[in-house]
Each structure stands twice: as C-alpha cells, then as structure tokens.
Image (cartoon, rainbow, N blue to C red; front, top):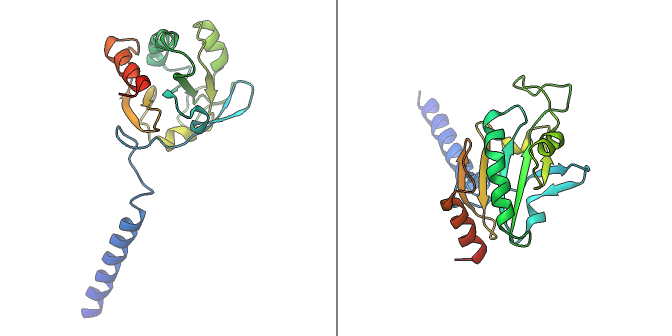
Length: 181
C-alpha cells in the first residue's frame, strides 16, 4: 500500500514537472499572445508563412468555399483591404478546402478557392491549406475564424464566425495597429 502511494506521488510530480517545463511551448491562440507561424501555399503553389508578412498588420482568415458565413464576410474583408496600403496591412485568407473532387475529414466537399475569389471579385491573396493544418495550429473550432495580428506578431483580436471587417470599430483597430499606437 505504501509503495502505491509512493508511485502515485512520483507520477503526480512527473506530470507537474512536464507541464511546468512545457508551459512556454503550449501557448493559447488568443488575443495577447504571439501568433503561431503557419504554412500554406499561394495560388501558384509558392510557400507562404506568417514570417513573410513581417512588420505588417495581418488579418489571418481561415475559411472554406462551402461555408456560407465565409461568403458573407468576404466582401467586408475586401473593403477593409482596399482602405490600407500593402506596406501596412495584408490579408492572409487561408482556404482549408479539400482538393476539388475530394472530401475533407468532416465530409465537406473540396472546392476551388481561386474561382470563389474571382466570383466575389476579391483581390487579396488567397492561400491554400487543403490539409487543414492551419486549423490545428490555430486551434479553430470551425470556419470562418479570424485573427488580427499586429506588426509585433501578437494577436490583437480573435473572431469565431463571420463579422463585418469594414465596421468602424474594426477599421479603427487596424488603423491603431498600423500607426503603432
């Protein structure tokens, strides 16, 4: 019996020690914390990561062509995109669509994100991540889910679901981040 308690105590100490030493590696993906890097490709197949946007404010939007709320919010993202220069602000709209003719792990059909963007007259970059790894990296619960990242790499706003990105409040937040205040 005494040995059982000793083994349990050693196990508890090991779990606490592991959690303590891992605390800096497992950071939440929420406002106030550094944005994790991501790996995606652009429409031409070139690799893109968060580091490629260094020093700019980035609206990271995780979406899919089959998602109605994604379609609903995209025009407001375009209007926000049109208000700022590319040296200050960029959108990383990462589609998690499976490849056309295939299905993702949840059974959603693959789509053509580039055709989707053309249909909606979107001019911001459309990035592709058919594996959905970006969803695991950012620990999303669905699509759309967005993260407004400052030039310092910190997440300033997280939105689950669609929103009006060109609202006065969102424009003011992007402006404050661009101006560095």
